[in-house]
Amino acid sequence: MPETSLADYLAQAQQGLLSSVFGPDYFQKQTYLTTGATTFNQTFGNKVWDALNNQKVLWNLLRKVPWGPRAGWVLRTDRGTTATTNRFRPVTETGALPTIDVSAYQGVFTLPKITAASFGVPVRTQFINQLEGGMGDIMAIELEAAERDYLKGVNGCLTAGSAYIASAGDTNTATVPASVAAHFKIGDLIGIRDATDASYNEGTTQLVSAVNTSTGDVDVAAVFAGAINCDDGDMIYILERAGMTSIDDIVMADGVAVGGAGANVNVYNLTTRTSGGALAGLSSYNSGAGRDLTLSLLDARIRAVRAAGGTPNLIVTGYDQYERLNQLLQSQQRFVEYSDYQVGVGDERTLPGTQTGLQVATYRGIPVFPDPDISTSVASDDTVLGSKLYVLDTNHLEIAVAMTPQYVENRNFFDANALVVRGLFFSLMDLRATRLDVQSVLGDLNE
Image (tube, rainbow, N blue to C red; front, side, top):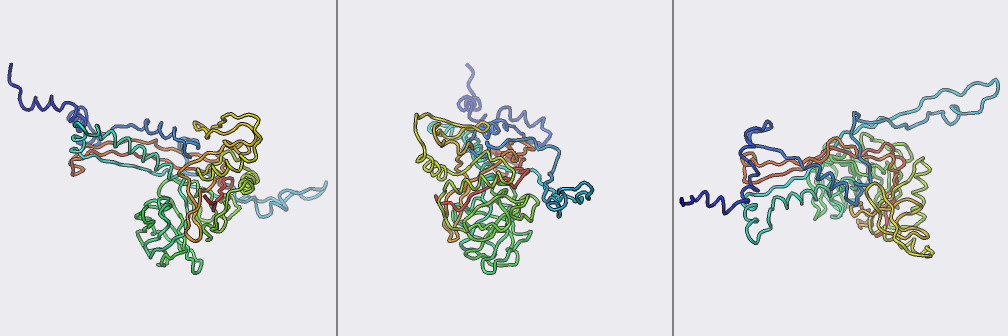
């Protein structure tokens, strides 16, 4: 028999190891690419898309629609200055007709937002982990981990809080409680409210450049507008999101007493959001003082949505408020028999409740869903309170998708200037609210 060469021996001994490093038919791939001499793409977007739609989170409770050919929509903000007295009125047989008046309209504009998650695996790590005692295909493991991170990030965008009281800082940094710092994303444009003179300092350069979720530091690339110093009691709030719009942005209005101070959170291109108007949500805070969830508080939010012409069909909150609501309702039930009862929205189902008396899974016929990512309130003394509770009309909420999640992989070591395989998930979409005045939030709740 002919002597086996060293190259052949290594090829047999390491069969399957190098293929996972360089990919199947790696060298053939280099010959037909048009996007780059040594780069190739693989799309696993459908896998991520399926995973997104099977998570019990706010993401899956909202309908997804194609982005379509529009960049915005129109909201009617005023029936006319004399609408209540002249547009509609009784007319006598020979009397004058009502005065003609013109409604006021506001254009709402938004474009799809890019969200992305990336990862990389060194070639040596990939090789070693497939030896005996290793983790196996570390590339596949990291890819799955990146998928989970991406899903968590997307839902985190939708549930991000929009205004928080700072505990310290300087001209370039605002320090908030560490547990809420992640609600601010790199690239967000933020404003600051000075507690000393209640002035609002808003500019176009205070973009978030770094977020430290261990210390709560939120850094901006340029000094705060007015070159003020961020002190304890000052507030930072969202003027413009770099990523997806959050539900908390939607339900805010100018002057809402978040943490005891008035926040002027913007959304889309709307810079003025008068409370009670068509451009503002229905917010209920307690001036930065914690309070227990009660049925009367929840009833008031439901009533507010209905009074504005909405149909409340979804309640979303954290597990703390879900359990408190459970306790409130259990004490009022009259048990004839016990059975698990669930209701659903889309592909999601509530946690099991009881079908008799007042239902745990629903309240007044409205499904109640707990989401661990729902933002919390912060008291005026910097104490982190419990989860917020949202009463929503999802008929006017949608996630508009321009590009579903895509997966791109790059094994070009020269481009990376390192022996590493890189992967990236990204998508183009945003949360759209075709009516902001029928979405409500209940904040400043104790855990």
